[in-house]
Image (cartoon, rainbow, N blue to C red; front, side, top):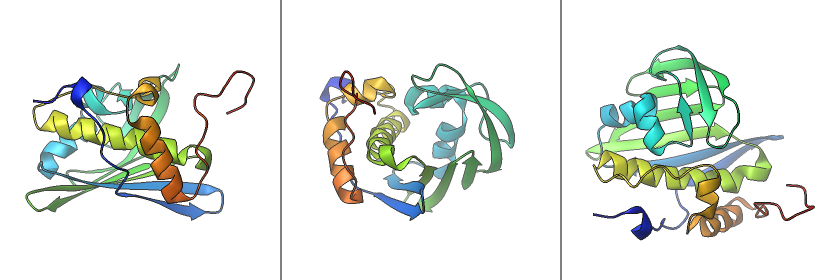
Length: 183
C-alpha cells in the first residue's frame, strides 16, 4: 500500500490545449481502472469530491441545478450551475466538462476546463495530481486530497508544471510570486 509520502507523480502526459483567441481550454485524458459508474459517483458526490478534487460542493453535481462550489484556498463559494448530468457519461458545469467512456474494463475520463492561459501549466499539473489521488481513492488506497496551495508545495508539482509548460509552449509561471512581483 502506498501512502502520501511514497507517492510521486509520473511524467506529464495525457494533456493538450485548445486555443480560441484569448480563451484556452485544458483537455486532460486519464484511463482509470474503475467502472464509469464508480468514477461518476466520485465526480458528483460531495463526500467523494472532498477526498480528491481541488474543490468542494454543498450538494451533488449529479443533477441539473445550482450548487455552491468552493475551490481549495478560495475565500468564498461560487454559485455553480450544473447544465448537464447524463450519468455516467457526461457532466457539465460552468467552464468544465467531463466525459466518461467505458474502456478496457475501466473508464477513459476526459476533462475540458477553460483556464486563463497564464495558469494552464499549473492547472494541468494540479489536475494530474488530483487524478492520481482519485485513482488511488477508487482503488481503496486513499492518500488524501492534495489541492490548492498544498499541491504547489508537493514534491513533483514543480516538475509537472515545467513539463506541461514545455509541452504547451508557454512560460513556466513563477508561483508563488516573489515579494514585490506580480503573478
